[in-house]
Image (cartoon, rainbow, N blue to C red):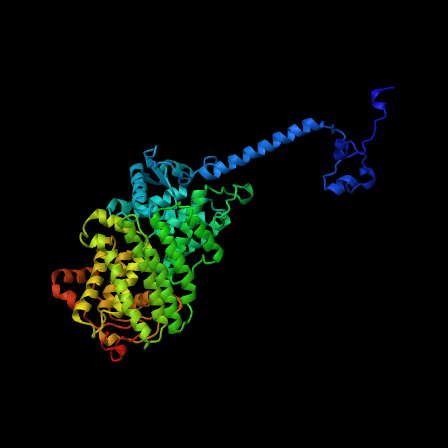
Amino acid sequence: MPQNHLASRPVKACTECKQAKLRCDSKEKFPDPCSRCNARHLFCTVDATFKRTPARKRLEAMSKELQELRNQTHRTGDQLVTGSSFTSESRSPASQDDGVDEFELTSFTVSLAGVVVDSSTATEAFMVFAEYMRPRLPVVASLSAQAAYENQPFLFWTIVTIVLCRLPEADNIALFQLLRAPYERLVQETVTDAPLPLYKVQALLLLCNWPLPTDKQWKEPSWLYCGVAIQAARYLSLDRQQTIPSLRVIGVTSGSIRSRINTWLSCFNVSTSLSLHLGLPCPIESELDFAAIHAFLKRQTVPPAFAIEVRIQLVVAKFTALLNHELADGTSSSFLRLFDTELDAIKNEILPDEETKSIVEYAILDAKIHIYTLVITKSPVNSSFRQILLRTARDIALRIVEIGTRAIRTNPENTTLTRREKCQPKDRHRCLGFSTIFLLKFFIRQSSDGPEERQIVANHVAMTQTLCRACTIDPKDEFSRIASVFEALGRENSTEEEKTKLVLNHRMGVSLMFDAVNTAGKIRGKPVEVEEDDGGTVEETTTETVQDHEDMMSQVDGNPEFLKNFWSDPYTSLLQFDPTSLEGDYPNTW
């Protein structure tokens, strides 16, 4: 009989039962699994090609498979620690946690959308970043300029751009103007290209801390970029203590443990500081987030000064939500005492060097002046508690100005000092401007203050003005604009005094800053409201203007008496606080 006509024995047993040499009822139970597989939750399948494996060989195969799984687990752990096995996108400068900086580029030039930059200029930008900026926001560790240019162009051009716009040399300023348009297009493409890998989150945080200059402050997009960075970081699970593997299902690699921790701590520090200076709620404020941040700080992956700054921002985030409500005097004073106690405990810790002490003290004073001003603006006008707070906040503001201008006021023409000052985080300058406006508002015009006290305050306002003049590159840049606000407020006449409420009263203590800019705009005859969508305007303008910046400062330099008269002119109240109304009630303290 031909071979193909031989009767073939039908397969009745499933593979599991066949391997165990047991009777199988898969044919009767079809399409359900056989009774044995169903009872043991096994995968029941009938395969005519299946051949039973002896128990000894099967045990050896299982042992080999287990060992391979163990080896794979070890390799994954090593990748999370060193970041050495990631794809080219994940091999960012931030992943080289214990490496050495390499700023040299192999090519003579680098380019972005046709704008050519000499490699020596890019190398200098990386060196400035590593010296001045990275210690203040250690979101990336060791840097390789060539690796960043090839594999992480957004991080590379972010570092180059934020440095170039802060260098005072004319050729750097001109190069920044050429780079700005293509770089802003790169930013727009990046923030909409989900999901964002770790190095892009890091670049956005750098851009939030050192934003590009804008012709109007409300055009600055730092708050929007910060939100994108936080949500991208949460997508990467940076806010959780458990490290996730680099899964293809989430579309991006997870990064090394050190990079993940430092990036999330930077997210928290940048967003909380920015919310404080913009008068907005903290975007990271849950107890779960706070617990994770405390756990990350214990890993000691960031410099001591930055770790303490994060701890200060933790205190700010916890108290801001509470103090942003209507509180009675007694309740506010209790909260402030607890707030001061926590910050002073941090201040009294042993710090490694004088520079760290200065950074920590400035951060604590920054938190205090904003929280104090928030309580002042919400306290009753005739409250004795408010009176005490005003005097305390004045001393804080004076100290902020003293620390903030210390480096540059003795030698404002020193280019190195100017470069260093301009490379400070923008929130540091926001704090300095806020403190100066606080002094202008509440203490320059107090007729009951002694001449010496008024002169001390005036001298400190002049210190800030000196710093702004030294850092001004263009008449329309941010330092020049804040200097013009100081001048406008200082030259206001008593006949212009208006006792009005805050134009904005929901932006915490920063409402003082908004009102100051609004008032300065009125004095200079500029519109204070934006155009409506229909093309009509609702602008409010005045006809009075102040002198040109250069003319005014030439009078200050040429006439010592001008400065005294300059700060002695009567001046308006920006808030619903009339200092003169307290003079009769508290003659001994004013």
